[in-house]
Length: 226
Length: 226
DNA sequence: ATGTTATTTATTGTATACAATTTTATTTAG
DNA sequence: CTAAATAAAATTGTATACAATAAATAACAT
Image (cartoon, rainbow over all chains, first blue to last red; front, side):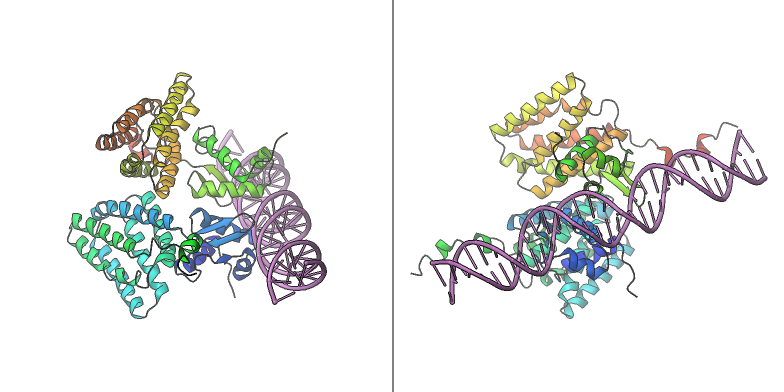
């Protein structure tokens, strides 16, 4: 009944659960439990976890196992800054090959986004938002860059889980249509600017600069509470 | 006598051998031979090989094991194009924190390059050339980008092994000093342009567009030989 | 001799066993 | 009752055994 899953399939399932925040940052990923859940030996699971660790989706601490990565504030900034640098740069490459078919495909994806928004299906919404960005990047003729962007998109989903405000997911997905329209009209420069502003907006919607548990200065916090 | 090597140490040793072309593209990497060489079980070796595979230094084909990756022409172009896009972009970030100490450090590295050139030590030369680029990138305040550049530098070493002309390594290392001088003089724009031209020059020195075994058109090749 | 099939050898894929380590629970002292 | 020390359980680290697959060699037929 439960057909055998390939390593790749297991990888995708775990990744999806993480990206959709079913497995939130910090969550433990015990080899035994996963092994049992997927009906494979720990060997296979370890392989998958090690891959996720190299992609910085997961962290592995010696003798403590794998946890869903909880990005630091600095990591969050670096990832968003990288995207702000790179994604607009790819727009001209993408527009070289932009076709009616592409436009149709992405418009259909935006419909799904709208649907997910209406259903308040946060998981689907996060997934689709990331997918929009990395499938766009995949249209450039540089798969090396596209793969890197895809990784940054997955990692961004972790950032949103940690630093995102309630609306930092949904508020920007409505906009995506604007980009498609700019691209349909071959407005190269405007599309590039739009992408940059879009990502800057996402970055600014994050609750950065708010100290997390580790860095709280208790001395200062309770200074006036004698 | 032979002290136990960590997985990380094994990883670095294999990577170094590949980058320095001691293990050329296409070379087989049999698990039990490596296992014996490093005095560790196959489990540890597999872990290292899988990491190298995710970094595209090595390819793993199911049931056929690991080989040093032999980049295709397209892969070579994509990697060089990525570097041409990204490395100049990082120059301003690097110059923000550029210090006398940095300058001194890199000038020392260039001395080593010169030395290696004089000794005709190709291995050291390739390694140092890559190191120059990725340690420079590491000075930017964005380690996400720096890590990506480092990977591209390692992969570039494979590209040179496959598509490099005799002089495509040595001819560009002499120039590196020019960049350091531009940075010492805070010539931001010029440094950026220099980097772009430098990488374009490396790309153009590659023997791309020469069909490899797979793509030979025999019809055309033997058209006039009846 | 050449091309095909069968057999052997070598190599990778996967699970499992056991050791090392960390985490949790229990006991004991103050 | 709290805190430290100890014991038990759970979890990861590593090696090894065996199965599955591919490569190399030998045997055979055309």
